[in-house]
Length: 254
Image (cartoon, rainbow, N blue to C red):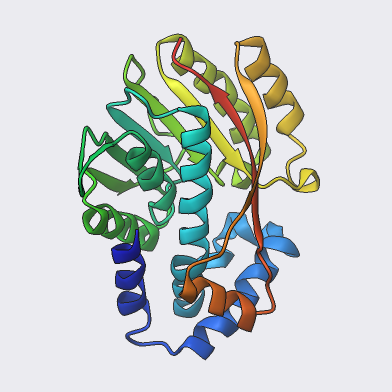
């Protein structure tokens, strides 16, 4: 991960200064916390500064929490391919894939292939760069969650990290039975979202449906010291993420 973080610095601070990224991070955080209606229109990624702030700050945080959740659930054991819906910059899918790997010294083996899909062309390009930088087999492509086939079967997993809540209500409602069907055909399903319930009013219905299918809900709180760059950005932007939080819905392989 250290090599990836260093590469992120080089990639996104080539044309922007840390103060410029800090200002963009403040705006980006406001969009997520106070003006979530802008999410559907692509507000978080509508400027170079916000894109850099997302890649440098939120992507590593998503990697860390997804890694923790994947390991805690043993969700990636035996997985051969991962479909990452709403993949963003690819960090969550990469963390899931690396959770399936078995370290042999410094090398990894049995890393599953990641197939990412996102509607934002910049995010897709960034996800492909993330996979290459981390040495993960896979490819992201432009598309929508609504129209992406959920190819299911043993050895497959469907991941959606911080993506389901951004869907319009009708599309989200239509997605739930598709997820349950993919699980019935052998796939593991993992949903990760923020812990704040006021943003996810749909959660209880999904939780009940997952429980009826034999799944589980978890809340996660991870205390950690952020990497140096992310710690500096957080401090300068007035953020204080001493603890990463998330909640998940998980259906193991049927």
